[in-house]
Length: 303
Ligand SMILES: [Zn+2]
Image 1 (spheres, rainbow, N blue to C red):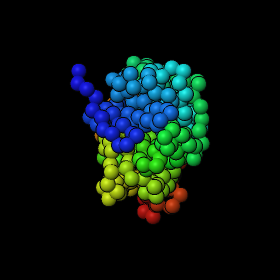
Image 2: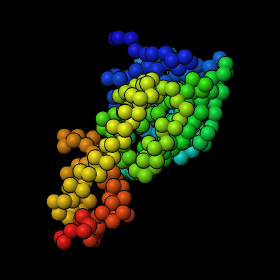
Image 3: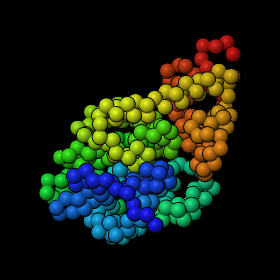
């Protein structure tokens, strides 16, 4: 077994998951103050540094998803803080089910999968935080939560002060682009979040997956622009799909906007439907698409 790679940034240590935290793994952030040690989320890699998790005083989740709860079982009885909009998703599987919004057969299969692969267990003891919440870890080290929804309703950036290191979670700067395929996800909120993110007083950005740590603002801005551009690329592709003729949501889902044809994860069809639906809502609202019964078509044409 190889040692888990990590890097230090003042009071912050980042343990990198497999393939720099590519899903299903993630990067584990640990913040040490003079009084307390906090972990941000608990990805699968937490299970390879179980002694670190056991020594932590509290977990602060930037959002709730299965791949961010995979080490919570290593911290029984320790405080788990979650933004209030994601709190029910942390507290029970019923809450998590409403958070995903998938049909029952998918949820049942998903529960088995996340129990087996992510050590999933609900945390009925989780406590809620609000935008602007601050944790003082001692020695001048503080964590500030900044609500940045879109990926989930409660998704928050956790800013380590005074260093200005921002854990931006699943605003992960990946080539996949923004994920807003669940019931509490929101395309419009994600757009707003991406516009606000550069205004944070940050000197470094840490993602849950893929990029890991970015310390150069110009590089961050380039990566953020490419990440955000995936939204417009999806919109353009959807318009192209509709240019072939009027189609139902189910027909559009079959063609896939988000995932490659070979992707077969349990949630793919649900995430496609939700994502395409949100893009269609925007296009309907600004008059570029019309709806005739169950079928969507480009506006302005004679079809
Ligand atoms: Zn997520």
